[in-house]
Length: 158
Image (cartoon, rainbow, N blue to C red; front, side):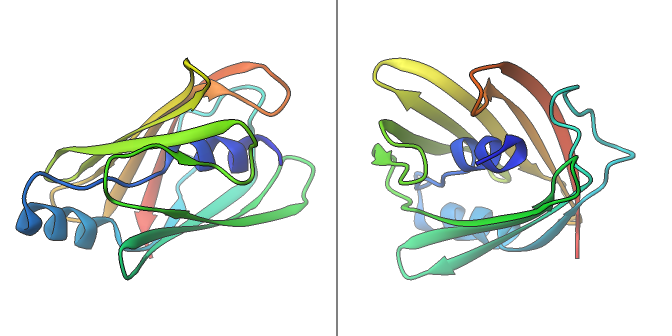
């Protein structure tokens, strides 16, 4: 797994909001298809992907993240990850020994963490704009090569 795929996998789990109505509103704002707006984004030097789309879907109690991207070498990468909205740690199948945790920290903001043992290896927030047309992913972590990175990726709703 390379760069942006690992980043989004570690940083995009979902968790329950404190109230069902708030959770439904937050999930509704996030669900849908998003395209990276590279001109508005601040990408890490080691993660200069050529394009990315994310799609969030609800499947019963789960939130699915479907990611497709084109890495800097021009290769298409894709993955689907399932998250459960209960605030518990869940193993990240694609990254053995890593768990994901998340919580809603506002009506449109999902805060996420990736841990390996007790070490925090990734953190991200996904904030949907008030008009629901833009998603800002602010992410830091350790990539598949063990290098640290930070980036802000802006996505436009499709």
